[in-house]
Length: 260
Image (cartoon, rainbow, N blue to C red):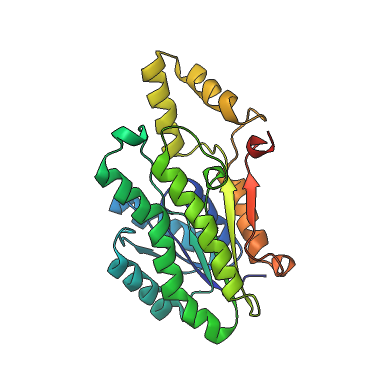
């Protein structure tokens, strides 16, 4: 279905983004990875993915808080692959504090990486998609794009913004072969969420397993984490012809969180 297409997946050196990149590569998609990490480990990852699936896998260390670096990443992918057919905006960071205590720099950093980077990648990739009349833009938002939690003002505001941006891009391209949709995961056991579990364990004096159960119990009725593979499966569906008329949707994969 997607053989010989090409994709950029931001924030894809671990967690959800890596799961998405793997799933795309398995479908014959050339992939540009992006994110932070040990360069030797990332080089090994790109080589392993490429060899396993017979695709081209590249890496960009573009800082998602820098519009100029985002633009350069998109141009690099276009030059290497000939096109960017699929854009998955997954990069994100977290910081927790009450509004009155929220540091200025953390607010700006979260808004830049979790929201503005989506705008800049889309802005850079969209014109070539419009010329070819085909593209799939998938923004990894969050259940926090639909509901709020205390102590996460910047994250919640940014993810609500991602869903709004998704709808606008979908409407502006509604009569084309370009779709734009969002996926809203609940708790997924990634390094970002593991840090929240560890912080909760320290703060409440809980064993790690008890902290994990507390985190799930507060929000996610299924009492199970979603997995990067499940998020990746949704990405593949949104890239398919079966999702052609899904435009501006926000798909929840949240174990019942927002059904309450």
